[in-house]
Image (tube, helix red, strand yellow):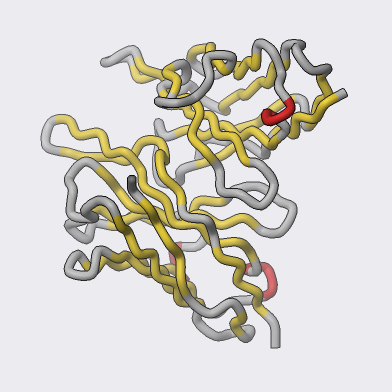
Length: 127
Length: 114
């Protein structure tokens, strides 16, 4: 059974960088059949996709956050990570990591729906 | 960006009755070359992550009870719970994956027991 587990500080100061890691167990992050993504949910609000990465390292980000986001993958540890810089109180949220199914056609691959999610971790931005 | 809207914001349904949630996309999510609608539905219970219910607009994820069904095409979609159970109390989200980035979700519909 695939499991994803987020880890990282629960409290980050304004203007600093939020860093989270997602550890994948029960399956390989190097599979060509999946992308790996980050989604966040402010308290009491809806879901916002942050960005995703393919095992090859190819990334794509939400344009609204792109200037502040970096997602990376470490296949040797079966992990992928999120860095969000210059955080403010508006970045306070539960952060989820999740697996997207990948669809490939004509040599190009693209992400589809999310089929597995981590339990989420609350990150609070406060001094 | 494709904007997703949902209606109603919330609804209360008696146990055993039908619940219907609507999702509308700002542009079609139907890919003509494979005739698939690039839309998924998720269920989120309090304190839990979202759970995939439906993908390709109408394909039920493995293990999802058959009282959940998805329908629609193009820009208008529906999630139906045919006979509401107590464990179905949750917020339901639609998501498009036709045009990314960005992946976009609807704002959610809260389902309660009347």
